[in-house]
Length: 374
Ligand code: SF4
Ligand code: SF4
Image (cartoon, protein in one colour):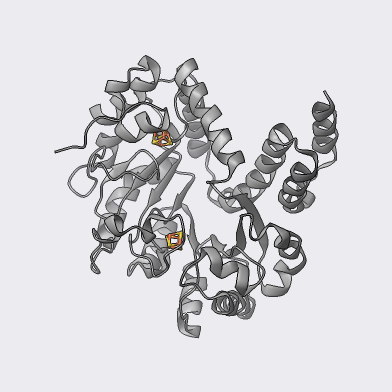
């Protein structure tokens, strides 16, 4: 009851302007009080909502909005052959990354052994995937497994997405040399939002997780992008400081709020480490709920994920099984979205039969996965 009361009063006093301060408040608050779930969910959603709306609004059409609404309804009803198209898509410019962050598959030999230096999605493949989805698409994130800015075609992809009327964002570690010309081309490309991974307010804490990353280089690049935007009179890209809160850097969270503007960021986002006890417990509850109440996982309806080679996956969950829902280089993306593999994946949430589940979904729901594809 005490939690409910505080949650209500917080929700009433929050404004969109204050939303950017809330991630810090909610994490600090949960640490001293030991209570978190409801308040954190509501407040976190508000900040998330504010950031995403400002990115997507300039591209919004009635067709996109009605597709989104239909998609939400079809997901809620666990309709395995939805009439709606995915409101979001993730497309991977490259699976390569120059860092080896602790906990990322880039630090696992069995993943890096599969990579080749020529793994860059060609722009014509990107266009072929995006074009049929664009009229109903809320946004594209140029991301999946690697560092997007290493993708050779990324600037052309941004321009292509805008030509098709789609908002574009991507995450970046930004820990690579960026020349003034490259910064100018990036700003002029019109990319809407860049989420910059900087998990520390000092080099010492930052470099614990971001192995191979350089704190000073990231800040130098943020300053260069901010200065370039200012010189060209551009409001975009919005530069978001993305801070993953681990035990070793939590004490620096207040500094994010104090310093983000000084460094050149427009905003910040604090998220918890996916391996933290709270996130693991919350995921366990969510998947138990999906399993027991036969609900559909959000990702299987809302977001289509495409790897550099065109393989389509239901989400960005790590999956070494070799399964995919089809290949968008060879086939048409709409046929994949409406095809037997995707329909079967969604249907399995309703039937709850582990043997019918896509392997990574079966794992999420706590079942033994099928053996890898041959
Ligand atoms: S920057 Fe991202 S993709 Fe690269 S190693 Fe770190 S977490 Fe993985
Ligand atoms: S792998 Fe997990 S997160 Fe991804 S769609 Fe399946 S159940 Fe959802």
